Amino acid sequence: MAKKNQTLGEFIIENQEAFQYSSGELSRLINSIRLAAKVVNHEVNKAGLVDILGAAGETNIQGEDQQKLDVYANEKFIQTLTNREIVCGIASEENDDFITICGQKEDHNNKYVVLMDPLDGSSNIDVNVSVGTIFSVYRRVTPLGTPVTIDDFLQPGSEQVAAGYIVYGTSTMLVYTTGHGVNGFTLNPAIGTYYLSHPDMKFPEDGNIYSINEGNYAHFPQGVKDYIKYCQTEEDNRPYTSRYIGSLVSDIHRNMIKGGIYIYPKSSKSSNGKLRLLYECNPMAFIVEQAGGKASDGHQRIMDLKPTELHQRVPFFCGSKNMVEKAEEFMKKK
Ligand SMILES: O=P(O)(O)OC[C@H]1O[C@](O)(COP(=O)(O)O)[C@@H](O)[C@@H]1O
Ligand SMILES: [Mg+2]
Ligand SMILES: [Mg+2]
Image 1 (tube, rainbow, N blue to C red):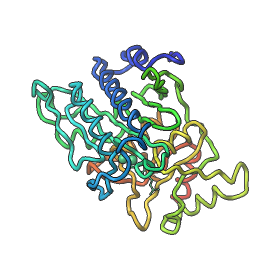
Image 2 (cartoon, rainbow, N blue to C red):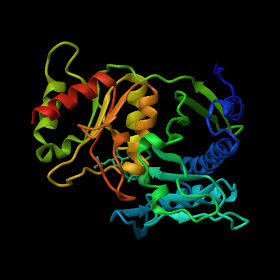
Image 3 (cartoon, rainbow, N blue to C red):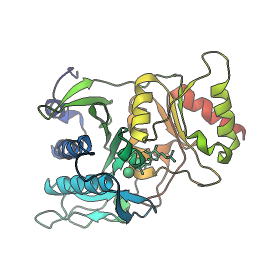
Image 4 (cartoon, rainbow, N blue to C red):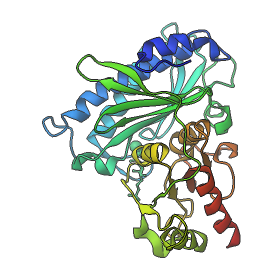
């Protein structure tokens, strides 16, 4: 049983056996993410003092202006994961294609691939609003000793062996699952150690917070418009409260603690919405489901979707189980 204030290191070792493939590699992988997150956290915390604010001057494959912190975080996570000899491939929001990691012995014998959003909530970096990092881990499907292929990355979310996020907010927290519940660890920056502050996190089945960028209302499907009206109607425990930070990690983290629903739907401006299936929606869906919540594209379970492209986007409905089911009812009607 997870002991409050246990360190992340202790927790990882103690729970290693629970992992079906436990041979220590996944523990080393989580440990390397823990380390890279500390390095990024250090930079985030002093963002105004060092030359890390603003655009980096490049655009990524999504056509977005990369922020300096996007590039910095991307480099730190790739470096740390590569140095630890655990991954055979990495895919990132900031890299057009996946990266093959052949290992120091160049034998392609590592078992895991990592997909990541190194810096989530980029539009909030320069305005000192919380941002995050999201990661998703799979066992490779191609034979050991051969270079990874796209097949190792295009696996349905239900095949994830671990997923998590780091939120760089008023405090820095690492929240993750290996399929045995969800646990949250808070970083004590003075000593650089994460402590178990949120054992066995549970997503309330109901809540009264809805999170959606209503600025796009005119372009939303009718089902979403009707659900927003439902949230705003004076009835039962409604109207709900509208909360939207604009950082996926922070919006879902808040809703997981308080109860609520986050929606980034498709719209007449973006036929598949904005969020990326492989390194935003799948990992958040794994965590949310492990905490008792629900995640779909408005119709189908996110983790049942068969990915076809590295950077594909999907509509995302995620949060308290009863609230997501209500929103899906409205989507069905239209
Ligand atoms: O500004 P919008 O259109 O509401 O989009 C906000 C959403 O886009 C994101 O910033 C996309 O993620 P990145 O910042 O990693 O590109 C989410 O974190 C957030 O929920
Ligand atoms: Mg993101
Ligand atoms: Mg990002």
